[in-house]
Length: 385
Ligand SMILES: *Cc1c(COP(=O)(O)O)cnc(C)c1O
Image (tube, rainbow, N blue to C red; front, top):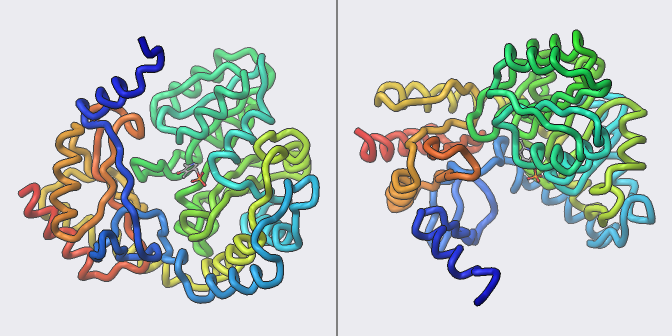
């Protein structure tokens, strides 16, 4: 007997309609993408500002590759940390109003590294139940005791904090929730962590670039400083359109991560060209406020149209606009139907979301046109009405 039973388990996933296939994209990311020679309106990417394929971002990438080559050659602590990494860290610190920032290769690694460097056996971590998988996994890896509270339930969090007698408590939450698109109750989280002397960590992967006057994210929008939110993590591969992530906070926090975060220490630094490209996209993000205005306009247009169709929207003001269908069969069929109409949306199933909350995850980008959004609404009308 085969002890691994891989084929059996894969068949099981297929039977449950949970088997996942990758789409192969033949074009740059954008409001439309090419697949199998055909163009699709793309409502499934996290390139919210439309910077992933911006000419001046590409140019910065090319010029840095000419200067630095491709590979960084080593980890940051050996000889992989270039002037481009360093400059981007300083610019991100200034952008987010923190003392310092530290670049990680992915958001997943940043969360794993930061949480496991901060919390250890004997400490307690409090996580919103809808937190991103990387935050949950960071908690597990840390060896600390993890308590999860019902999504956004400040009453339950308060009880859990009051019932805790550990000295070191870390409260962790998405800023903008990746699958629901709603925002964390920042006043609640800041208030509770202050009164219980807990540390607060916010993952603003979907807020950075999108929220706040200058695109500084949810913490800029809520005007929360480093003292109120000591650990800010955000990614570079979503709103900023490139790749990687960073953690921002105090001098001591960043030095601790440089010494202790294993996903920082034991990995090759990202290519300098990615850093140079990100520096350029960070400039565009701050200067071109029209991208955020356009997003707000598109979100409003989509929500108004969807409400007129009687669709069940979630309370999200961000470019993440899910429509819950509640079964694997329903989301797969809806995704397939829209694809035949030339429209790509995310069909999200367990384990990315809870069972029975399977959904279409529609995401908007500043580079979508009104008529693309109207066409999406038409597709949804044909599908559901
Ligand atoms: C995407 C995402 C991450 C992971 O970031 P990557 O750079 O893609 O690894 C972490 N947290 C949240 C909330 C995310 O949405």
